[in-house]
Length: 200
Image (cartoon, rainbow, N blue to C red):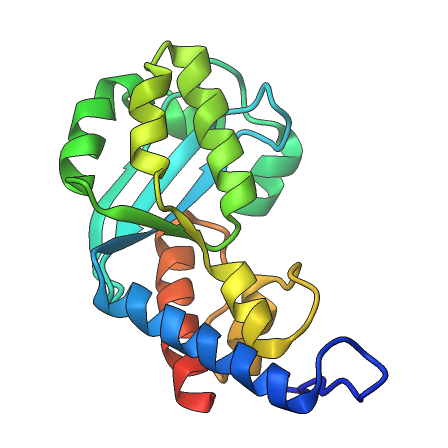
């Protein structure tokens, strides 16, 4: 892994970069020791018309506390199926997210979300809930205080935030091949945060 230390001609000095890294460490430790759930989704595609078809939550040890597939109201995009392996046939007998909504809220029980790419996952989550008629205020409630671990990891490395989770995991010596299913991606995210803390 390469660490970028900017010289005095850039806005971050070496000393300020170190402070930034320490802040990333403090925040990651807070997430791992606090009242959070680590979450990931898989979707029918990436547009605003697509929907969440898999949702997984894990605790700070990587233990799964919720995992479900959902039947969407729109079909899987073939490109999304090619990435995740999730097919329309696999989802045909699954519950809708609306049918699972009360269970999801009960599992969360006020805990805050940590997503690797919060911007994407929250957008897809909200669009799915909107399509299914799930009240917006309830969605707002569960996303209060949500955190993006990709931005935190990027702060630690002082690089552009768009680093793939699998690339970060390999850089930290995590020998997991990303299969683009929500349950295994959540486990990878928790391990990535833990090993990043050790190396700071």
